[in-house]
Image 1 (cartoon, helix red, strand yellow):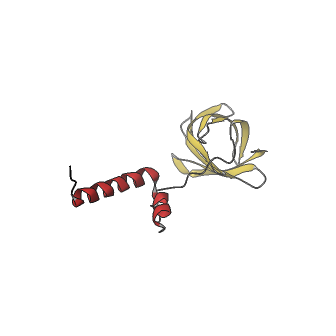
Image 2 (cartoon, one colour):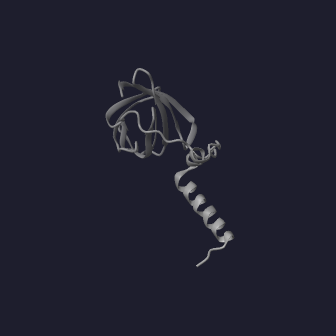
Image 3 (cartoon, one colour):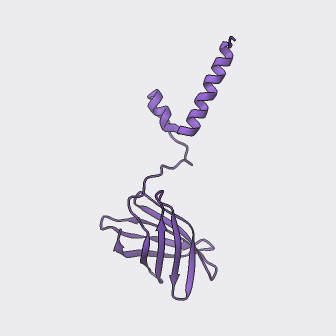
Length: 146
């Protein structure tokens, strides 16, 4: 069976598009030598540089929060938090390189978004704000090293 030149070109183009959609833009750079900028929506995910699992305390400017987390091999975080009689559950979270973020649904209504970074001393620090009331913000830090 003979395949036309047009069909071969179409199949080759389709295969290349499929391969790039699976492998990402880095393959195009490696294969063709030309660099292409990744779309703004694409973010490099880095392997977790530390494990945030365990029980530790986060000292906010307006409260002390007890954090009880587990972390899987991909850096995803799961767990609960508490501050006094207020409890919360992580809705999502992860460690990406030296960065950490998580979203807590608190039992009294607010939804806190925590972002931070591990500093040279191994301690975490960052900011938090209430997604339901963004003007409610605080900074935080840990004494524990990671």
